[in-house]
Structure formats: structure tokens, C-alpha cells
Image (tube, rainbow, N blue to C red; front, top):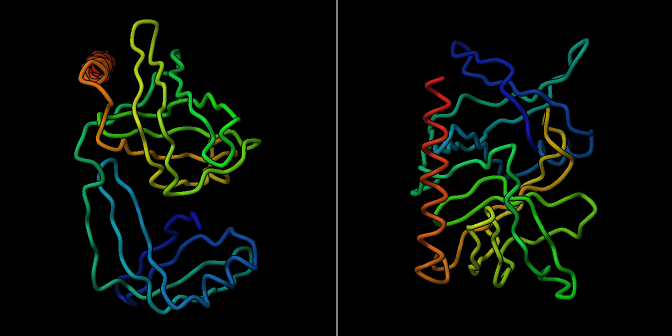
Length: 205
């Protein structure tokens, strides 16, 4: 379930979260024996176990409340610099659907690094399962930067319900062993370097 922190009460040692999910999902969450909260800040993942979770109803809205966490874990999400594809350029990843090899997908690349990428799966396509071997993916980052690499799907995250996000799934795939050839790795690194330079120039105005 995706939510946002509503309020922090360090005196009462309570956290409150928005509760916008359907009643059945909220009930399953409150009754679960093991609940973990995750938050992301750029390349850092924050995680803590949720204790004493309860659903609190107010006059105009409901909230999820839990005990103030005693432990907060911090993880570095990625060891490699990851860049987001520019809006004016639509890099694509061509692959066969692991559940239906006859089905060829051309998925938009959301962001990319030397060891993996995030792909946008349209809602009308069959879902991809975490752990699936995606085989050889043909990447087209521009007219002169094309290469192939093998990949494994690490996780699939629904983007539906997030403000400004398309009703689809974002698939994060980490390359198994990186790019399949040294030429492909150099091409990918060149594209990432160019994207970094563009980002720095834009930040300078």
C-alpha cells in the first residue's frame, strides 16, 4: 500500500498515515502479523518495522496510526549513478514477454544506470513477475546507441494511484552480469555521461 505521513507526535510516540486504500485492503494490513514501512529519498531507502498498527476514523477522513519506531534502517539503494530519460527522447527496451515468448514488447525506459533500469509496462499488457528471466533485451537509447544485455526482473511496483503517475507498472530490472559486451558497456556509459552533463547544464540555467 502506498501512503504518506499525515502527522508526527513525538510526545505521544505515534505516527499517522493517510488511509486512502479500500476497506478490505486496510483491514488486511491492520490484521497482518508483520508490517514494514519503506520510504525513499533519492538513492537512500529508509525502512522500519510497524508496531501497534490501527485504523482511526475521524469526521472527514481516516488514518492509520502506529507506534513511534525504535529502529530506523538506512540502505543505499544503488551503487551506480542512475539517470532519468529526458522527456524529449523516448529510449526503448525491446524484449519478449517471459510468460508469452511470441509476444514482443517495446517498453519505455524510465531511468537507467550501468547495472539496471526501470521500464514502464502499459496497463493493457500482461503483468511481469518478480524474478522472471527477461533474456536478451535490445536497448535503443538513440540513433547511434543500441546494444543488447541479459536481465532479471528484480521487482514490479504499481504506480497506479500516485498523483501524476500513469496507471501502469514500473519494472525495475537489474542486468545479470551487466551488459553483454564491452562495446555495449562503453555505449551505455557514454549515454549516462552525456545525461549527467545535460543535467548539470540545466541546473546552472
